[in-house]
Length: 278
Image (cartoon, rainbow, N blue to C red):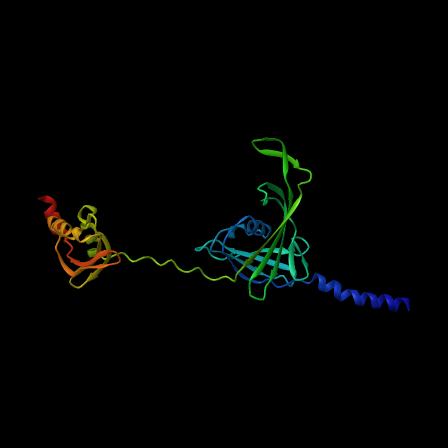
């Protein structure tokens, strides 16, 4: 009878013990969207510090079978690891409920809300989320330190009594998506660049140059003049600078300024060279 009771007890506790040590599946690729001390500790714990800056990625496979492979992508232009690192349950981490809990990452520090620095260790845990995100929870425990003495290659210190504290942080890494490509701004047409060079600050005076666009009959340029008295001298400066233009839109009062549009003809390279020689 006692043997039957003992066997029943083992059967009762066995499945619960196994469930407690079961590992969640955290497989996926995740995007590094920022960086800080907390994420730095998490990546160092997973030996993935190469992913420690924006537009990097973290690739995980496991941990249902007790092994977790860790790969990284360093930055926008980097490629994914071809030989991911393998971490093992019992050696590098344990599984508690629905989380992967790593052995503490030592020799780290935090600045508390009081402005003081604390030295200690961080415990990092991972858990999958229904949203597809990876939850990273970091618990830091440390104390302020009193330096006994220091020299070039070492610093000897001891914990300050009564300063032990625990700080908790949570990070959520979204599923990885390729960074948006950098779209180069197309260079302005040569005619527009030349007209901008002709309309110097000396020519403009009090008149502000606005939108510039290339049309069939020349380069359209919008201007804003503070007062009507600024328009006549502006046109005179255009003529004195031998700038070929015509009035497309006569000055109209709008938005507390006189708005006008001119069609300006760019000078060709030969003409510019000839003018510079005069």
